[in-house]
Picture 1 (cartoon, helix red, strand yellow):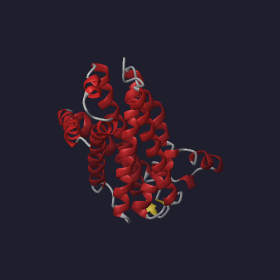
Picture 2 (cartoon, rainbow, N blue to C red):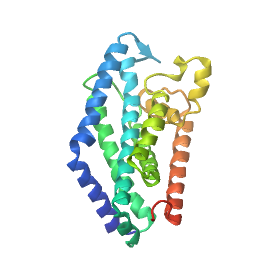
Picture 3 (tube, rainbow, N blue to C red):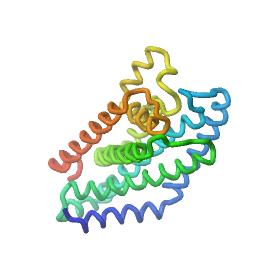
Picture 4 (cartoon, rainbow, N blue to C red):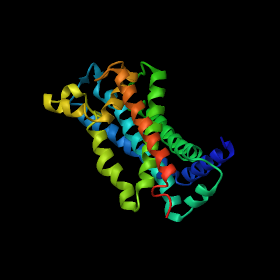
Length: 253
């Protein structure tokens, strides 16, 4: 593996992250803090507990997942879209690097950004609610896998998109509703029977459920099923990226 190439691609993306620190880091943290105020204070005052956990604490894993999924997807999509848009993608394709090394550099940077933001939001949550982590190692594992899988998804979106409108289409019109309908702010047991069946068709629901289990030891679905869901999702994304680089789909003029 060309470690030097991977490191160079990774460092370039992290430099871009530092140059846009307000947009990339400060804005998501402020937005999430507002969620704590609105949902934790306003709605939390009307809902005492959910599955034995105070509502303000219960929504913390969902808020972290909401931010990590969106940031991982967006950062990775932009990282590959702009080189393609500017024509710099040909320099990468002509370089002595394979698809795995390119993906590792760009996705690794997007994953790191999402992980940093998720960690800061977790730290911020301690200022608003009392929270404990029942399974810290599992929490880190779920967080890393989620950052990785959604950074891979963003990479695919960035390659697929031909315009800025398409770049925002999937995160705004598909991913955001899936996250909000995936149990970010509520338990599946709080829904009527029909909607409980519907929410189980949402793949994001399994990720949020598993991540919440790492905090409170309770989940809407078995933890093994959550791990299986995220493993399948990651494998599909990797397979699609490999196929894209093999065929040159939307990479070449």
